[in-house]
Amino acid sequence: MGANDRGRVGDADPPHAGLSRGGDTTRIVARFVAAIVVGAAGGALFAAMAAPLPWVLGSMAACALASIARLPVAAGAATRRPMAAVIGVVLGCSFHPGLLGLAREWWLPLMLLPVFLAISALLCVAWFRRVAGFDPATAYFAGMPGGIAEMVLIGGERGADERTVGLIHAARIFLVVFVLPFVIRHVHAPAAIPASPVTVASSWPDPALLLWGGGSMTAGLLIGRALRLPAWHLMGPLAVSAALHATGITDFRVPAWLLAAAQVGLGATIGCRFGGLSLRAFARILALAAGSTLILLTLTFAFAIVLGTATGLDPALLALAYSPGGLAEMSMVAISLALEPGVVIIHHLARVVMVLIVAPLAFRPSIQEIPS
Image (cartoon, rainbow, N blue to C red; front, side, top):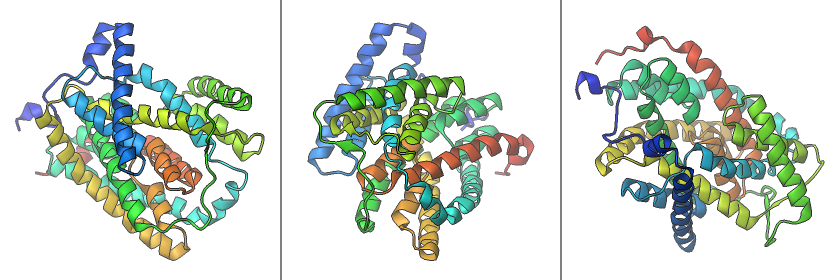
């Protein structure tokens, strides 16, 4: 790898580059619809195979393959925001008045979360410097266990290669979401008291859902954007829906088909991030991300087992709370396994805030240099 290539992966135009340059709204919508169709087909296949979290995993896999094959599929920021808003409302439905009472049981995992994040960051940054040969800034922000958008934006401001950082984080989430549900489903015992369902079998939204759910989404989007929350199109609706459910003001649930549709959209968003890559570049990204993901998952299960033994908490739920996947993705895994998604959401929110605050402050280019 030459000096000018250090810190860069991939050998094609950035994903969605044509969309951003073309500005053709009709084409954007058409490619998004195509991604949803492909994702739904993949989800149906995984559901028939009885895979965990089938609508996310199937959609993600199908859209990744379609993107690498350069089929006309795409899920950009504008098209994925409505899906993220629906998922935010759904995740908010997992909150309930008794959830805050569980905080007394979870103080130790929350207190040790910064320790987990610090160890994870040190090991992953070293991996990307020594093994991948990334430049200091790119290795640092690719190794931070934070959100994709935040790490790309902050890293770009500090000299990191934005494309590489984004692809590595996308590949990490892809691998974690694909692996973790299978692992947890096969190693954890069913919860003695399963989490409250967030869906109902209704075939069509009732008036209460249209009122409360639609209101949560609208108010959440407005509040999230006004407060400039990270991933505001997800976090705003989640916060409003969670507040309504946690205070007992309402207990609305969404139809199962609507959740499945949102999961297809979520999977399509992850899969389409690899658009424009060759198979070789995709394989290289996955290989580099697999190393950091193995580090992160090893630490995740180590902390989960130790904390579960010390506190008596469910190690499977602890693994999801500490897992290096995205907030929405890991919360969906918790829902699919009848675990308490509210606990996962709280830990991941804490993780995102900690990394968002500490990572930029701790970054020192001269300190990040690791001799080859």
